[in-house]
Image 1 (cartoon, one colour):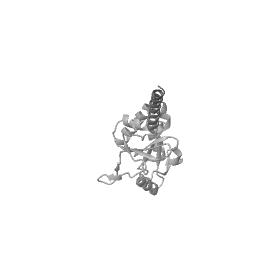
Image 2 (tube, rainbow, N blue to C red):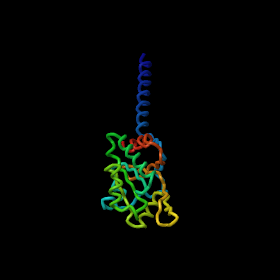
Image 3 (tube, rainbow, N blue to C red):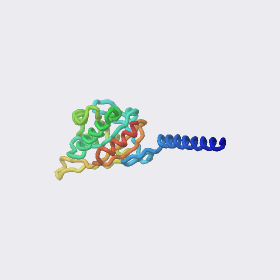
Image 4 (cartoon, rainbow, N blue to C red):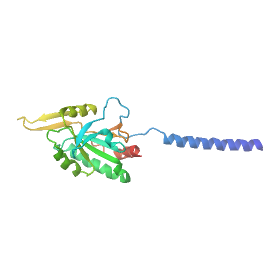
Length: 202
């Protein structure tokens, strides 16, 4: 009788230990993102020194404590840029109570035309919390383009007087510690990004 009772207790203890182990495994399981996970890649250098649309010099570390979405574009972009910023605005609203833990950063690849004043009108028109950044020098632009491995090319009109800019249409996500985590392809929809942002926020 004593042996059976001991055996029964042993089984119960084993089950309890298995359940505890499973709970810990869930807590420490690797995150499964729906967008491209570039965590730990040495190909990128996400740090920058740029000027925001209020005239303040900004570094990536200024946004530590929030999850950031970084998108490259220009204010005269006819389609990709405004549709992307509109979609990101929707994503922010879908975060609900966590929306204030997200910082959206728009970096212009056309600083010759996108002055501080123009950025100040354009970027917050999508959402007052969105921040526009611009390189103060050609060297600063080159550094950030190389750091994020983006494609930027001016496409001039036949008379050479006007141009548009072909550029990488995706966005990047940086976590609360300033580490580059995700690449978001253009036109991927909102739900996948909301899922991934919630994981990084919480």
